[in-house]
Structures are given as structure tokens and as C-alpha cells.
Length: 194
Image (cartoon, rainbow, N blue to C red; front, side, top):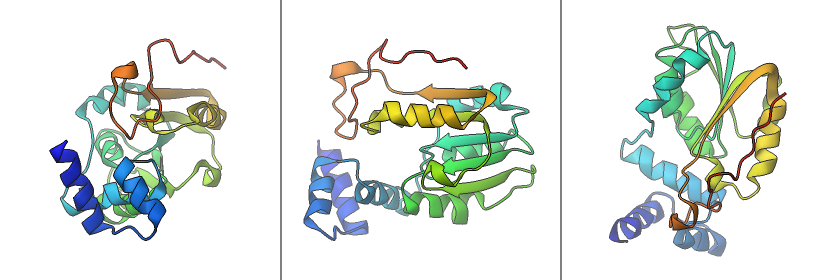
């Protein structure tokens, strides 16, 4: 609890609330644009780029894919790891937070790398006009109230032979994270095939 209070105080200092709604979002940990911009501002200010080395297990599945979409990419840490092992891939990073996307573009990834990878940045799926050969959605859906609509939108963006890879924490009602609006349980997702 003390850690959460300190983190929220840091968020207040780095990104002071501009409205009563922002204060409520900060105190309750609600998934608003302000809240996530503040979370990422604190992370960036303290040099934290979140990524998970287990993402590298996906490299064999992603190798040879021309276009990879990372939905809910945060500051781009997972894409940075994947891009270090893949080449000639177009990565589309989708994140609501402009703070996180600006950091990914200006500090972490840029527009291209020495492996021939290219990076494109979007705040929503609307600006993506290509079929996606693979989509990753890592630890995101638990934060989205209408996640079924998001899954349908991601599915519709995939090429005919595309792959959708999802990871969510499965803690059910034992999940006490205030940011998780969905308490996901085994069996809640179905499998959809094209």
C-alpha cells in the first residue's frame, strides 16, 4: 500500500492533475488517458522501460512476418526486444498514451533501425491501412472494459493467414490491481479461427 501511495504521489508531481476528474482517476487508479500519461511520465522520468524477456519466445513465430502490430505497446520495450532479433519487419505500435508513444519514437526506437525494421506509431487502430501478419497484445486486455470489441477489431486487422497473440494475467477475482477492470479467468476467452 505504501508503494502505491508513493507511486501516485510521484504521478501527481510529474503530471499534476488539471481537473477534478484527473484527481479522481489518479486516486482510484482509473484507466483514463490522464492516468496512463502520468504512469508513463513517472516511468520515463525514472528510466524505466517495461519489457519482458519472455517475449523473445515469440521470435520464431514472428520471423518472416512483414507487419507486426503491438497493441498497447506502452513505451515500446517489447518491440525493442523483438526488433533486436528480427529484420525487415514493419512494426506498428498502438498506444493511447501520447507520452508513451513520443518516448518510443523519440528516445527508444525512432523510425527505423539497422536491421531494416521500420516503426510506425498510432494512438488507435484507425490509422493502420495495411493487413497485419501478426498482432501481439501483452498484458493489455485486463485494462479495457469492452475488451471483446477490441479483440474483434484486432482480428479484423489481421491478414488471412495472420496470427493474434494475447497474454493476460489470469488471477480471477483474486486480482486486486485497481487498474484491472476485467478480472479474467480461465475459459473466459474462446478461440476464433478464420
